[in-house]
Length: 320
Image 1 (cartoon, helix red, strand yellow):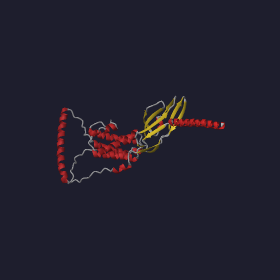
Image 2 (cartoon, rainbow, N blue to C red; image 1 turned 30 degrees about the horizontal axis):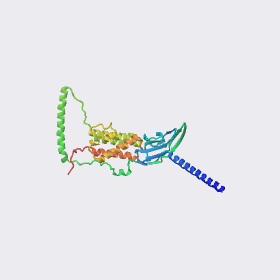
Image 3 (cartoon, rainbow, N blue to C red; image 1 turned 60 degrees about the vertical axis):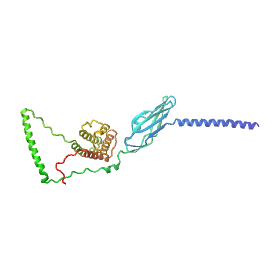
Image 4 (cartoon, rainbow, N blue to C red; image 1 turned 180 degrees about the vertical axis):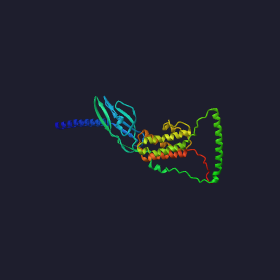
């Protein structure tokens, strides 16, 4: 009977001890899980230059100070801004807005989070994984670009040209007489103003400068920023002179906001936006554009000027 009682007490206390150990292990596991740092990234697939949200949540204990990663830790990604999220006594969180300017599957570096415990530092390394970055331009887009048609050569006949020859001679004679009379009068008054030639139409200037830019081969010689800067300056000067406002001093957003002043259609407006966007990426965002990106921007610029230039009455009417 005594042996049975001892066995019963042993089993009773052993059961209590086992239950206590189980509860202690479960609580420790729950505490450990609660203290694991978290890193969240969204989205995982972007276009070059698009923003990506990255949130780091770090549990902290009493007397602990957390040092989150700095800008340089995210290379090749660039940090656009850092926001502090709602803080508690046990969790500290930061949201980073980053962006990437290299296409392909980009592997982000491990991010260090330093925990300072009364002068003793402990570094945790967080793996953010990969982000897929695609180009803003699709190779299939180039299929819609065609070469500019060459000028149509018209055949002159004496019958067609004779009225214009007579009219031109009469106009020339009248102009010479008027000029001589005006010059004589101004000389008599002692005030002959300096001759100022008429301005060249904006579209003619733009076409000349675009052709000069093509010949310079700036991006082929390793100067893509200068190439896109000159390209956008040509288009801004052409638009500003055509619609009488100072477009050269405007940013891309300010210029596109003037859309209501322009008369060309939405397709041409979309082409202009593409040219300016690619140029901004190259000039300010270190975007490594491909050769077809440079060539397509120039082709779209030629097409934009050609389609938006004012129509002019030809000197000789087309034959019926």
